[in-house]
Image 1 (cartoon, helix red, strand yellow):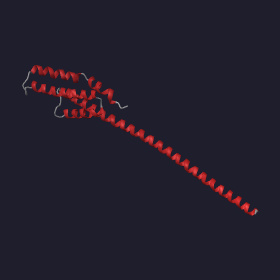
Image 2 (spheres, rainbow, N blue to C red):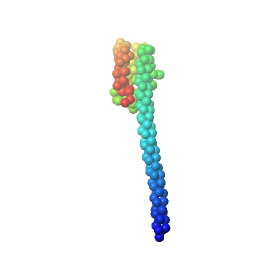
Image 3 (cartoon, helix red, strand yellow):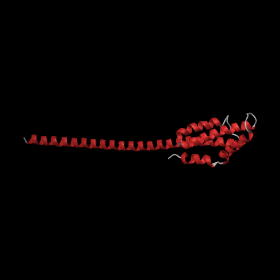
Length: 168
């Protein structure tokens, strides 16, 4: 009888040691799982920050491209003394189109004004050059007025764009 009791106690102790080992192993696996989950969370947050930074960089590049297209159109107008309707205006129109998605309406409105005034200045130049009928004096005054408005006042371009070109 004593032998049976000792055997039973030994069996109980042996099974307890086995369960302790399994519990420690399970706890270790659980801790490892939590560690991996925290690591994955850190990587995900880092990836989100990198994606946000990349989005801001792309948005800035697109906005700056619109600005440069407008600036180049105005520089060419200044250099030539008249707007380049054939080659430059399509770039300005494309910039205006992109601006509608990238900037507030004030920037798009400014670019549309430059576009409309460039067409009006070109029509005035055609009258001044004698290729169309019209009042030469009135056309020359209009052309000079529009050139002064957009070319001599360089701050208009910067004032229209600078509050909105940075991405926050």
